[in-house]
Image 1 (cartoon, rainbow, N blue to C red):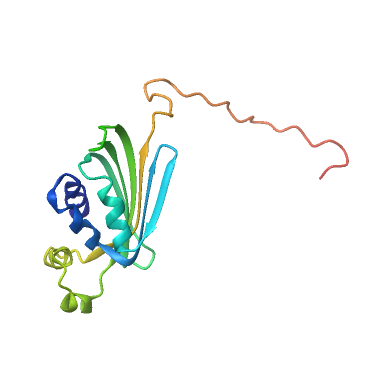
Image 2: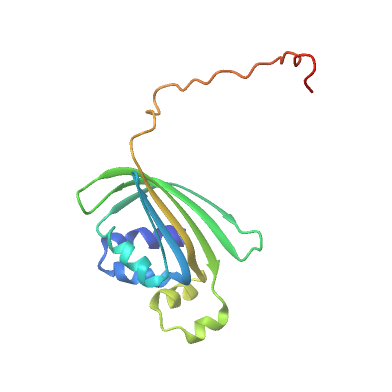
Length: 163
């Protein structure tokens, strides 16, 4: 909940430059818009990519989360709709985020306000992998029924000589 409440408000706020501080030093971020894809690593490139989304307004509809196998992180999938600040493109989105626990010794060394706030909130996590897809209208409308052929219940025997 803290991640969702914090992350998306940065895009329409003046603190968008601060969002890069939430990523690990080796973090990755990818953005897919229609047929265009971009993958970057490192805080500087991530910040540059995030700035291209400045002014985007996100409306979150659904969030699912699960912990990582080692219990030291979380994977979050967020869905909703977005209106971009540049051009006003409206699209549904899917956002997958992997969070990793921040080592306690980093708290003493950090001068990052975002990290300090995470420790104060009791949620010492940073973003390690982040994939945002703005979805085009290629999918069939949800109000139309989707039909698939039923799988045959009975399979005929193979031709003689085949195993």
